[in-house]
Length: 466
Image (tube, rainbow, N blue to C red; front, side):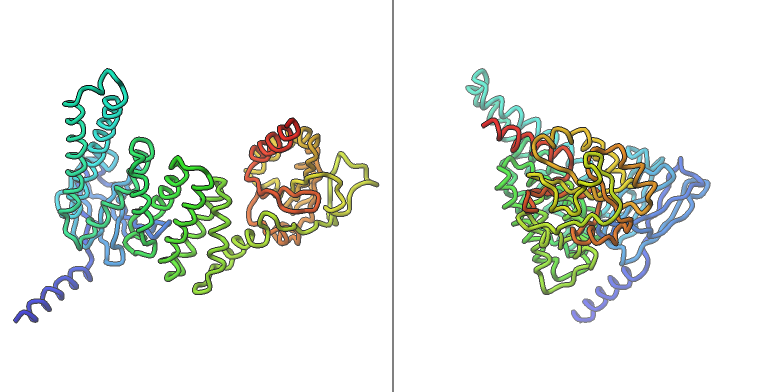
């Protein structure tokens, strides 16, 4: 009998989830407009279903078990409303998605809990930050520090707010998607407040981030996949630690992320590609180098070939290695060099340092950086820094018109990404820069003209004064 009942329950659950579930409702001010439901796959979104709202504002969209996670409704006003696609039918009511204050969940328990927490948690966080501010006043200001009664009341209210939030999450059904989703959403959304007002919580918050499994399909479909990576490494960078300590912590975080990801090659490639770019953009090169070498040395999984080539930059072109010589066989422009004295190769240049810059006339960022570089060139040249610009243009007229205003050496072989120079230096984006010494040893991979200018000011100009 027990076995029969259990079988019936399982079959009912399976049949419910195998059949399409619906998101329906009434949006009174969106009559006759299109509405669609989109879902998340890691860093990307995809269309689940679309329909037209009728003349009375009614609509119905469907989703399946493959969409389990978080989705968002979006209409012509481009204002999304997030919903949990947890296997239940959901019904909402309101005026328009942009008028979020009018939206109510009519049906769907998990979405009702989601709606309630989404409204209450930010208010609790604001109140908690206010009590923490007052606590500091009653602790540090001698005018108030003698007042024990209000201080104890502040402590009590802080504890009550935290307990209230914890109790809400603790009473959610353990096997529900909402019971997993809300704590993760809380983790991500609280990062800024923790860094600013509650630094004592940073260690436990970092531990929670490291406990996240990026191969978990619940996270992959949650819409929090990117936010979790961003928040994790933002908190590390803004934790108040020394830079050396930050890099050690980042290495630890990378290790914990890869423990799960190496079992899922698709997600490993996706996370590595995004995180590598994030670290590079934030000039956290020591961490991006660690990630690159760690992933390249992992033999139990396959790395996408394009990503592998990009990561290989750090193994071949890491600081301390000798950069390949560059032969100036193609077209060139060098206003500071008479034709008879133009060097035949990079190693012929007689300077203490050489900055090799890869870019092109069609590169928007290059159009910002290279004019700035030209402005700093005279100062750098005076400190022994020569500049060689390697253009990825494939049109002679474009190359000539682009570089004729620059005071430094510019070269181009018109082979774009197929150029042997580009391949030798593992260039996968523009602009890319390498600072070399007179032995072509790689000293620095600047991510901007401003970073190199700071290096010149600090190491060369200030160093010479000491």
